[in-house]
Length: 396
Ligand code: PLP
Image (cartoon, rainbow, N blue to C red; front, side):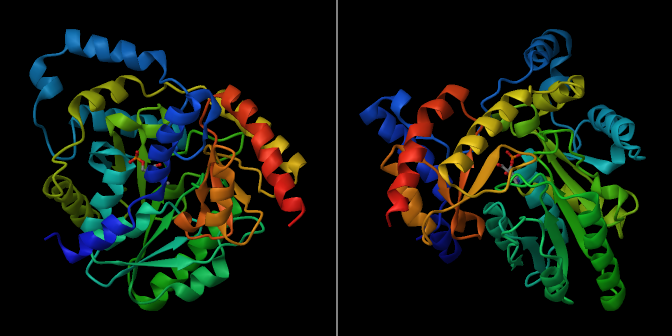
């Protein structure tokens, strides 16, 4: 008999993963070129060439123990130092290796920091729509996820409601910009207003409220938009970064946490995160990948590929009558469903072999997410189906 908690997890197991499987099933029936799978955020752009070159060089050059061996649970010290240095150059920060903890992607990083911080019953606030796994990650440590309702006009955070939802039990807030699923980037003005509220509430309750910046999409931003570096605005910020999207390496499971010295209880949080990485069973981030990313700190995927997809999809969908905030980052469009029930709408899209994810999976019913990290040609082939789908609703 499995645990009662797992019964719930299995029942609500990710709809995105289920759609991914459904896409494969439809492809077997209709042929892969006639199925338009926009369900999963699996990068379509190749990793930069530097990754392959670094992999080969490391295997040939480095001593096996420095590539495959155990290490400090926070990761190789020289790798962490290089990452700290690179962040300092980019953002004018003052990190060193002690502020960096290598993780098993952003998923690993979030679980590590939540394990380090949460007592049972403590609250973590996030803004709808949000990456659905936050609910599971917070529940892993018996915390409560508190959701601020969406501002569907702009999908910027609803700060009035945020302020009201902060209580004595609030331990952290998770901020995700550029955002999955809306692609919205929070402006500096928004961040300043959010931080003002946090400072005020910390004072009022005499507690530390940590801001966890979940930023796997930091490098995927368009039209020169600024993505503010949040440790510079609020001392109690922890950054959870990932190379899954920025270097197209999601299967390799590599990322890091930034735990700045200015953080309340820095020494304890850093020590607890180190131990959490070990006792959650990660032990340490994949060693070969640590070495690879350290050699590729200036490498980039070609974001212009995603930008072309964004323009093609957004411009056409709007011309067909769909409503959507134009994304400034990540590789998702969050469109208003053409009927109230987003699940029924996503089922109607499936009749055109178009797979999109209902917004309820992101705490925002009435919308659907379209992941455009796909082939440009696939978008072109899918457009007639999107148009027909819109026409079906004109007469309803
Ligand atoms: N956070 C957000 C907002 C995401 O969209 C994802 C993955 O899609 C993750 C975290 C997890 O990323 P990783 O592959 O680095 O674990």
